Length: 243
Ligand code: SF4
Ligand code: F3S
Ligand code: FES
Image 1 (cartoon, rainbow, N blue to C red):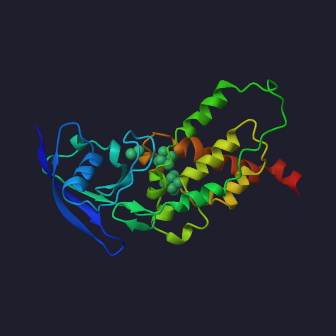
Image 2: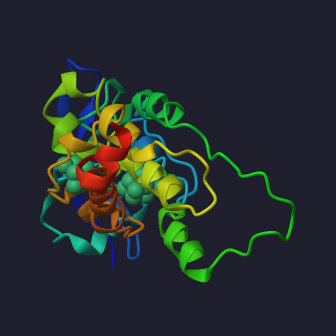
Image 3: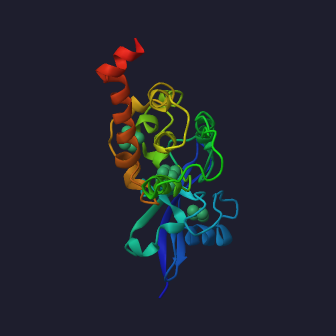
């Protein structure tokens, strides 16, 4: 049976406002369905970014009742029928209009991570171990929704940290490359610390909590990367060798 739900949706640009709407909800629908119905019936100019409606493109990221979520993967059945559902844009990135933000910060940070450096090997000269494959497969599940970037307080609450902090998604990329047995780049832990601001991460794990792919960003990427930084910087033998 359908019902009428009460929605509050951010409309406009930075100087915009939350507007109230009452929208029909049917069984099995997700929040993105309701946003589409709102566009079709009451707000044809409502801006929202989406693509796959299957939790795979990472486009429909927004905040629902203040929590970073994918609009297409948030079922209406998780809310009470009389609950007011507030939908707002990602807070950490500049607002373009309504629910659409400018996420180009993330692409700038992506370009700052040096690419995989392949070794000089002929085909068949190296056999990847299954454990190495599995480790990077977890990180490769990332759909680049940037919900982890949105929620990390290092940039969410401190705009001026953006220059020096790449955020959990791209620190995870550095970790993935550092753990790859064939990557020839030798300086990734130091780059993570210096260029990508790894030491600003104080392991709050908020990034891990919001990841729709359930990647253990903190435990499997950020903490091991911090350990590698500590090993390289404070290992007495290595320090002696460096001197
Ligand atoms: Fe999204 Fe998870 Fe990738 Fe972060 S790590 S961008 S939360 S899929
Ligand atoms: Fe931010 Fe995740 Fe670290 S939320 S502080 S990058 S553990
Ligand atoms: Fe693709 Fe939601 S529309 S993840």
